[in-house]
Image (cartoon, rainbow, N blue to C red; front, top):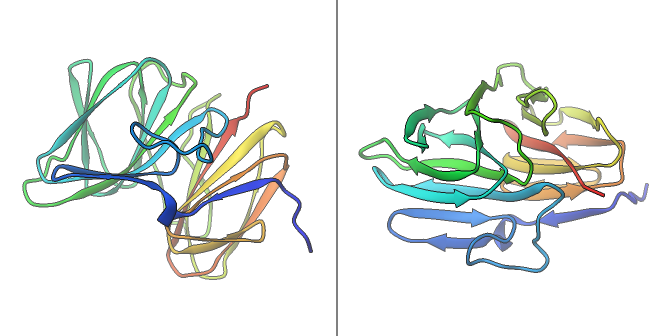
Length: 224
């Protein structure tokens, strides 16, 4: 069957890349010195970065508005906002007000860390909020969003397991990011660190094509 759902695939190999001795980021959308007219924000979703920090190193980001979502994938991440320091760890997601200065630091002496740095245009939280992500129940999409905010889910799937995501509003869009493994989503093959934007749909079907496949789903407002 032909799938007529509007979509855009963001292949991992085509992401923007910045790297030095302290950090490495790969950007799904245009970010800082990386700009591609085919990789502009998707609805209120502005930044989706796959980032690595060297041991003991830190970076500082400045934003005027919006919300930052931090999802550690390997190791813990130290963050400081307005002089207040805290940590977020694997199987957690931390929502931060983006306004002002945010410093992100690798707290380890000898180990690299890897995390997702995601930025939304809209204001979701007024204070840092950390939510646990329970991935023990396999092949299920587990929510970690906040009430009235962007819908966010993650799931760790067995091979050939299937799921259907039903959007909460038809004027929202769906952004899917494959953290590990491979999936078929709406008839489209996605591999590790690929992204897929979908819009003008009521639901999306997905099937894991590998064991221990991990997916992130963000349902975002598309605006007028």
